[in-house]
Image 1 (cartoon, rainbow, N blue to C red):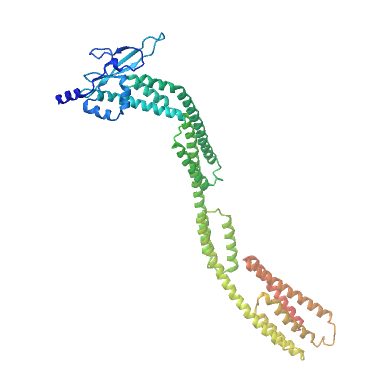
Image 2 (image 1 turned 180 degrees about the vertical axis):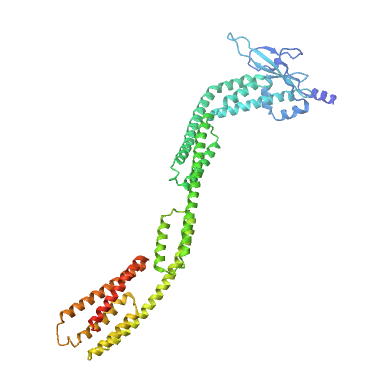
Length: 493
């Protein structure tokens, strides 16, 4: 292995001396070497990778131009120590400048170019960083990290652990400083503006949340407001993820307000719906009691009295508080069903009564036809006797449908008047006597009274007013009795 390395060294170009490495066109300078012996006051350089670890790969990654451009600034000793030559500043009198000779490190057991390439590559990496920084500055890409990046590269250069024109690279970096300062100022202004806008947007979210939470719990539209509160919270989280960060003080102040608004809103909502649940429960209990009463009455056949009770239940139902819409609809269906049982039964009963009235109408129509057979009157006594029988059967038949009451009564009354006109005591007179006129007037009044009372009784029955029905029923019986008496008196019976 030793022989191979020695052979390799014999084939490599001779390492140039420091004098040969001095850049052309530069005045002679004093080379100031850093001591490398043990006990030196200058810290020993960091050890560079040896042989196979660093040599070939670093050399292969460089172009020949890069390596040649770095040669004037580097020096490699036979034992693998690599030095960087840093040109000093020219004196005011134009005298010689000092060239600083600094030990970069040692790369033993490799050809000189490979040892040099390791540190040249580091320089090229630093120069690449400067190139990128210049491009960013040229493009005007404002950033707060430009000075930090420049400081990082300068720190690398100041360590002198790389080979290349360090002073030129440092000068390039220093030339960027004013423009970097301008760009960072622009970046700061843009950042502050973005923060201000971001703060305003966050504050708008908080203000709307506070407005929603500040509404009267009894008037707020909970569904819409709850949805909006959810949207505001989503917006808040999106702003947090936007990358723009406010100051800790502003963040905490805004979050405290937003959290308080959401907490207040949730507390009001829970209290409102808790109270609403209690109100709904009480409304359900009240309406359940009304339903129980309605269901207890649904089989009653006391039509007028029970109809009145259902009207009272309906008034109490309307006055009772509403439950939730779903519960109220279900309760109403049950209450209505109980009423329907009763009123359907009453309707059926009324239809049956109406059918009976229709039958009564047919019977009275037959009596009218029978009475008409008495005309013209030839035998007054016989006519009066038959008419009296017809009247008795007429009264025994009962009521007829209200729509036909007047007509059927008038038809029989016309026969009665004809029989009275044919009476032997009035046949010779063309004008009725005063008692007969008075009797006819009384009969007309009695008939009108009966008709009026019948209409009132039917109206009271339809309204379910049992008290009024009872009172009018007594008056109707008296009026019918008076009418019948006047009829018999007029007929001379």
